[in-house]
Amino acid sequence: MENMWKYYRRNVRNTYMDMVDGLRAFVATAQSGSFTAAAGRLGVSNRLTSKYVAELEARLGVRLLQRTTRKVGITPAGEELLARAPALLEEFDGMISDVTEGTRGFSGSMRISAPVTFGEVYVQEMLRRFAAPHPALVIDLRLDDAYVDLAASGIDLAFRIGEPAVSALKARKLGEVESVVVASPDYLARYGTPQSPDELEGHACIVDTNRRNPARWAFRRGGEELDVQVRGRFSVNSARVARDLALEGFGIAYGPDFVLGEALAAGRLVRLMDGWQGGVHPLSAVYLEGRTLPRKVRALIDFAASDIKSAGVL
Image (cartoon, rainbow, N blue to C red):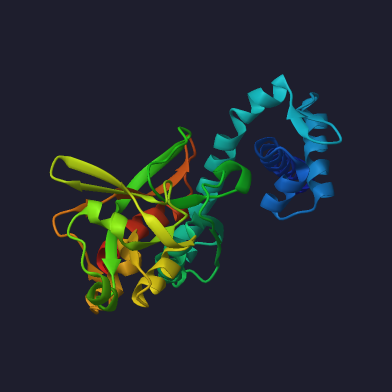
């Protein structure tokens, strides 16, 4: 019996773990399109990633990837395996996480994506609160105003403002972000206070170029909707810089409420045009369709939903 157990540990168990490593390397390479990108996601070298895939192909007796000098393609056999392997790996990871995290707390790593300003203003502090009871948990926060490819970048969870544009994503709505028109008391004393959106055309406005239509500001009142083309004295790709310019009296800004809230509460900025509401966009936690979420990612989504309400962010 002892000899059989030694044989299992030396051969069967090692073979199984080699298969898991090979599947991870194959899925990462097939999803990202290169061994370099896959190696970055897995935290290993290009050479080791290629070795794992080659060993998996040898074990299965089929070619999974077509290698060229410029890119890596996927064979029909590879497509069939890719359709099933991610779910198997996620189920395996979820099982291991549920067993270990239930007694020791969350561990391993999570890669999170968020817009730059929202990430700086809120997400990074929320993640600190979430991670505090879990010293073995590693957070990799990527801030980018572009909608990154979750699969190619190895993103476990993304916080996004606006409707998800990719059908392969699942989303849980966490709240809403409203755009608000503001100016400083000093600017209003010098140039007057616009009472309706069409009066903005005669004012110096601060344009946030991160918006989909930067110089076209949308409003609604009851059933009435109105879009206004504004003149930008300053154009910046940061809602926080737009706010700071408005605080200094350089013009009227149109920005998200989570950026402007403190300045409005302190009276350093004034909300304009009572009765008119700016654009409202959903704030969501998004992840890949069909993915069995690890317990720690599910817990983070639940934590964020509760934290956003208790922190009064939106």
